[in-house]
Image (cartoon, rainbow, N blue to C red; front, side, top):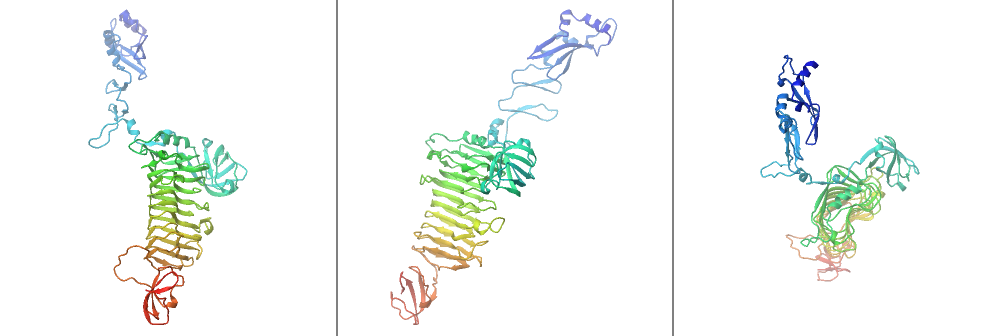
Length: 626
C-alpha cells in the first residue's frame, strides 16, 4: 500500500481519534496496543471507504492481533463493547476461553470444583465429583480426594528397590560391587542393606555415600564381614520414616478418650500404596488409626531397630488400640528389628491379610508384661510369619502373647521359628494354624531350624482346633507343650519329618500341674526313620485322650477319660490282657480286662494263673479287681 494512500486515509480520520492510534490502552490489568491495518484498503481516488480500514488491537490474552472495522471503531471509540469482543470483562477468578465465534468469559466455579474439558468443539465447564447412580450427591474434588489418606500425602515416596545381584565387599572397606544393580548418582544419601556383610555375618545397614557407576557405590559404613561374589538381594531407597510418622501422628487420638468410649475409635485409615518404604526407626501406630497396606506395599527395616517395625507407644491404657486394624502388605524386619509388629495395649484389634518377615525375637508381640489383663480380643487372621533360608535366631517366636485373653488366631502359617505360638493367654481360640520349619534347603540343617514347640501356652481354657505342627524338633521338643490345665485340642496333628532326629520329641508334652486337658481326634506321627518318642508324655492326671491316631511313635498311651460327665452310646472297649502282660507303668485310674484271674473278689489285688474274666483298675500301687 502506498504511503500516499495511507496519508490520505489518515487525513480523513478525526484528530481526536487519530491521537489514539499507535498508543496503548490498559483494561482489566492487561495492556492493548492500537494501530491501523491497511491490508484491505482499496484506492478509489480522492475518497476511501472506512469499512476497508481496520483498527488492529494487540491482544495479550492470545498473543495475536484482533481487528475491528474503522467504522465500528469511529462510532464506538474504545467502548467496553468493542473490547469485550476481544477480551470479555471479567471479575476476579474468571477465566477466558475461545468460544464458538469469540473469546468467552467462564465465571469462577464453586470452591473445590475443577475445570473440566468436555472435548473438541465443546465449551469447558467447572465440575465437582458425582458418583454414578441415582441419589448421588455432588462433592468437591478435594473432599473426594480426602477419602483416602496416603502416606505419600505426607512426603513418603516408597521408592525402595530390591535387586538380585552378585555382591562383593571386603571386611574393613566400604566399596560395594553389585553386578546386576543399576545404581545412579541420585541414590547418594539413600539407605541400603547388604545381607551378610555386617558384623558376624549380620546385615550391613548403612547409607550410600558416593556413586561410582551402575554397579559400584561407596557406603557410609565399612563392612564387618567379607562376602565375595555372593548372589544376594540388596535393597536401597529413600528413608521414609519421618514422612510416614507424620501421617500416623496427624490423625492420632490424644489426651483423654471421649466419655462415651474408653478408647479412641477409628479416627482415620492410613494407606500405603504399592512400593517399598524404607524405615530407620519404629513407626508408632497411634491409637484410633487403622493401617492399610496395598498388596504390593512393603515396609522394610533399613537400620537396627530395638523394638518393632510397626510399634505402639509404651503409654497407658489411654493409648489402647480398640477396634482398629492393621492389614495387608509385608512388614520386613530384615534381621534388624526385634519384632515386625508389637502392640502393648489392645482390645478387639485386627491384624490380618499380611506377611511378616525375619525379625530377631518375634514376628508379632501382643500385650504388656507390666499390665495384666490390659490386652484382649486380638483377631489375627490370614497371616504368614516367615523368614529366609538362613539359620534362625535363638528362641525366635511366631506370635508371642503377654498377659492376653479372649483372642483368636485363624488361618495362619508360622514358618521358620523356634516357637510357633508362645506366651501367656487365656480363654482364646486357635484354629487352622500351621507351624512348620523348612529343612534340607540352602543353609538349612536340622541344627539351625529344629523346632522347640509349635504351641507353648501358659494359660487355661484355650481351644486349639485343626492346628498342625511339622518338625524337625530339638531334643525334648514337642508339637504341643501343654503348660496349663483345662485346655482342649481337637483334630490337631504333629509330624516329625524332614531333617529331624529319631526318638527325640513328643507329640504332646504335658507339664506338671497341667491337669484336666482334653485331646480328641488328633494325628501324631513320625515318618518311619524319625519316630516320635511318645504321642503324649508327661503329666497324664485327669487327661481325656480319645479317638486319636498315632504312627511311628516309640510309645503310645491308651484312650482315657478324665473327670466329668459322659454319655456313651454302645460298648466301650478296654484292653484284653493277662495279669502278666498288664502295663508296667500305668497311671492311677487306668482300666483294663484280664482273662486269667484266680479270683473274682471285688477290690482284691488281681493274681494270674486262673480262668476268670474280670475288669481291673490301677489304684496307684496295684491292679485291683473291679
